[in-house]
Image (cartoon, rainbow, N blue to C red):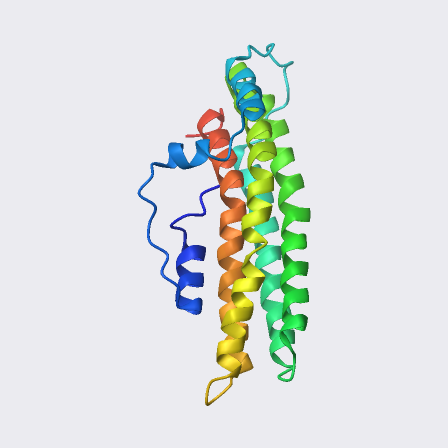
Length: 212
């Protein structure tokens, strides 16, 4: 998961008129600040483990996993669009209503992306010992970074509230404009939440016997 310098950060910076400079720290240095010593032990164990050769399994073409991921992402994208259309029709809505919608969409992302990520790991673990090790590392990374992801993305509604109030206090308040902005933010968050899925898919493509 890479949040710093992402489209989401730049978008929120523009909407809230906040300066969000690129971090001068290397990604590995920033990541180390999120990993405690117990997490480091778990990660080291996953990296250095020698998993047994998995039993022979029927391998599905990598495009099957791609299709599964595409269905999940397309469903979330469509749900976001529909929810924002519905919300924008209620021009008198206070921010509390928008907040509830945003939180509901975040929960929906977690509920769909988490199981998808687990299924991709299960598939990856049947490919080879090396791929099984990679799947084990992803389990640890999800555990280590999950709380940080939840904390950081949990601040997004508060930032959007500042933007909402600024628009409401302008000479020409426009809730439809806010709905469009929130739509863009949700899509940017979806992209961030999908990064681990895309990494697993790339690993499956690389190790797939069906790859040309």
